[in-house]
Length: 265
Image (cartoon, rainbow, N blue to C red; front, side):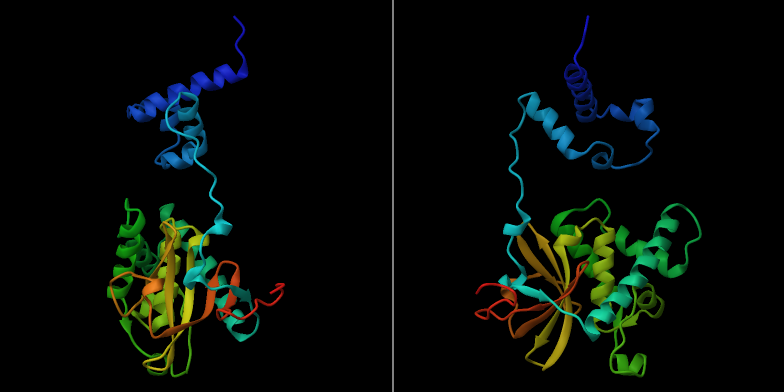
């Protein structure tokens, strides 16, 4: 009997769905050889969903238009260069180096103390998703680090520490908290598109302040080293957004009502 490739794929997918939903896949040699890789890494969710749809189970999800998701503080931003961008770029280089160290730790190779401390923070949210994952990492970092001014710790007006440096000293100011949370959340599985460091201008006291913003279910939650509670960006008062830092670089917030440079407004 001749079987089409589509038929073979359909039958194989049905078998995968049955054993997955029944908890029997771990007994298959092929799956055993994959180790402890999460199901979503073994079998893309699109494949599993397509199988469910082909069986008449579930509905075809509509594609997410990320461009339609609201901006943090509902404000446009524009890229900037200069001293702040150079500072962020230097920190990103250190972050990349330290991520490689963390990967070695996960591979059961040598693991320096700051890297193990970092992994312990990430582990605080192991198995959690959504608001619980965000809140646990926010809490872990806030309780791990003692707040001190750069002038007291480093003898300079402004010093940005990498995650390992912060975990070595167990001290830091607002941007050190923010950088550590940013990297820990990324390591815990939060998408880079949903993760930002923000620099705000507080009104009382009149000073710049760094926080982390995480997008969850279309809303932006603000993680602040001064509180354990997660606050929506729409509930932030007495502060003006100035800059946004993420994997694409540094951006400046454009005040509402002002034309965005390069736009036709």
